[in-house]
Length: 281
Image (cartoon, rainbow, N blue to C red; front, side, top):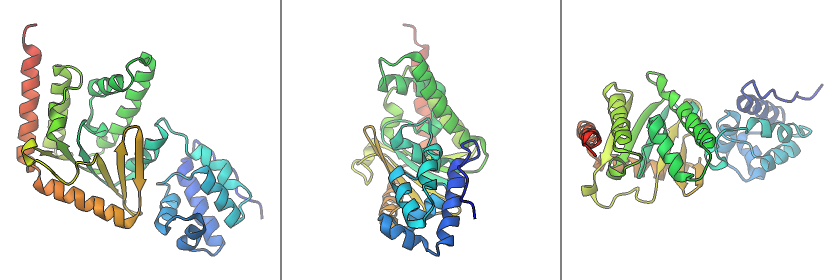
């Protein structure tokens, strides 16, 4: 019987690679746990690979070829499947985000990428890369706005965002940029496309002060958690850690302002920035 053909990168390579992995694993008579053990990964990780929601790294692909006897198929094709416009530490999270049915996110400093306006995103990237050519900034902004098109769907994914009050008060760009950015959040919330809560400064210490957190749920795969640091990110599928992150988020949301009060604060801050922008220089 001829071996599998190399994948066409234009034909959803991540999903095709996952489908081939499942086919090869089942042909070998292995469960997800049995394949995961020699790879030192969990059965849920194998499930995420098969569902096209996790990246297959070259070293893992090489071992899979050895275990399943697939003659280098997965090592050859994982590079095509992993092509992305995003940094390596973030690309896998973006790909999971694109197929998630529910996203819960805590943002301690900046408006989350899915909610950013073009002007706000441009100010963020210019701050990150103060000497980058304008063409580089344009490409980064375009990629961020492309992510935000997830919200063009009227219902999926369900997006629930908890913002620290610092997000509203940290000026990114001009007063006009901030007014537009906060008005966009308010508009999305009013049309019931996103749920937004604010953690006020008066709350003091809380459960998520260690950094940002994103929880992603899927219709056909275990949930994932994504945490970030400076130029780093970690996508986690360990059930116990994801459960702890979920508890962290739930406690934070329970103590944040309620939805109406949060929306009122966002609207108030937007108007403050708008008035500031209209003041004569």
